[in-house]
Length: 362
Image (cartoon, rainbow, N blue to C red; front, side, top):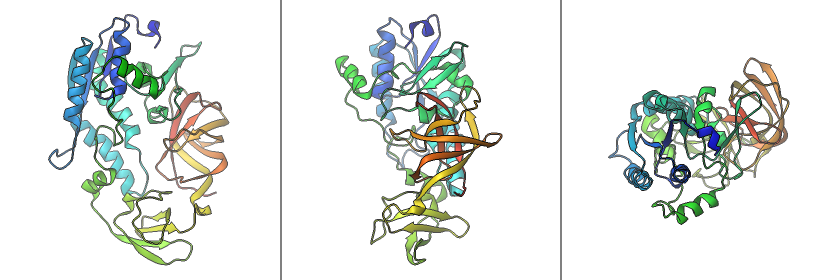
């Protein structure tokens, strides 16, 4: 964290109750700063239906804010989350796509609804994301990757607006996860040994399929083996499956791999072979490309289509305004329409932006 960057600035910290954002507060405290902290309240739509850890989260956040003499305010973004992030997610899965609610949560809630409610009173909004920023000689601010390839979260931030990036501050982005844990234990933070959240953004332990079922229910249809045309069973809804999926299928005689979805006929196509050729794609289109800092003419890139430590080499071909074709160096598994393809520079240092994968052919 650059001290000059925060000098004489009004800073808001989004404090979740997890270890990462708690160490963010420590990072300010060690500089003698006591920023205002905010806990964003979402929770399940009907708390009696789902297990929710929000009460424990708030207790942890309260304890950390108190430890470092910071004011903590609860901001209710419940309605905004369900009206915006959930609407986006359900619209996509209903159409047979593979959405990423966590990506849109950053744009619409953490740096969106929060800014409308309270963030507009502050110059900078600090979060516990594993990401960094840098400013070039022309004064432009760029999103850059964290040194921890496993925890790097630039892919989850690749849809935020440029004005949101300008206000974003990532005080622990230069650490790897083990270092953050060590700081938390050394400083005796109440959540030092708390496990990382694995659920959907803000929704704690809620299972993704339960989340979808709550809104879309079930719509049974045939499961067909692509290679033979043989019916092997029944699915409960196309929205419970994604291209490339190979776990949790529930069909005998596996392993099975999801290779195609026919939304119009409500058919799920699977293949019995190990990573069949049909599950791979080397060239695929993306649309509505969102540049984080500014549009660029760039050919050699690296990219991700899911949250993994790997950055895949490719070239980027523009086909229209906001439309591109990604030409990967090698065929990759599980390219699904609706996923965000996140684009980085050739050295996977700067995250340049992201676009949504569309249906295309080789």
